[in-house]
Length: 118
Image (tube, rainbow, N blue to C red):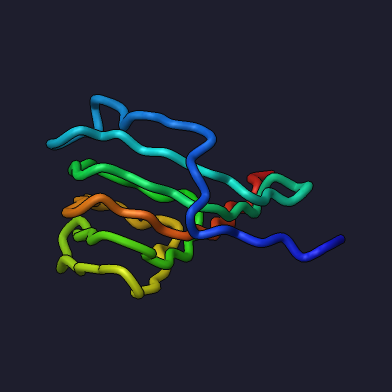
């Protein structure tokens, strides 16, 4: 199988909004340009973009993120907040629950692994 590039300027193939029950504030426009999914459906990567908004998150998957542009504040339920910006990389482990706040229009590379449940 050949090496697959992930162009940083990829345009979203799919747009979606945050579910109203998770939205806290803002205009929850988001888009995804998924560039790879393995045959098992457990591993995915691509580009994600979002407009400024704030919403609740609960992760069932592990996600590696590398911010290409913009700024995000992430607040863990009962914990401290972390602000990330262009050039920063981080991992959100499965089981994380909290709030994502997109402070400036953001683009990130995502790499997701979600184990299938038996």
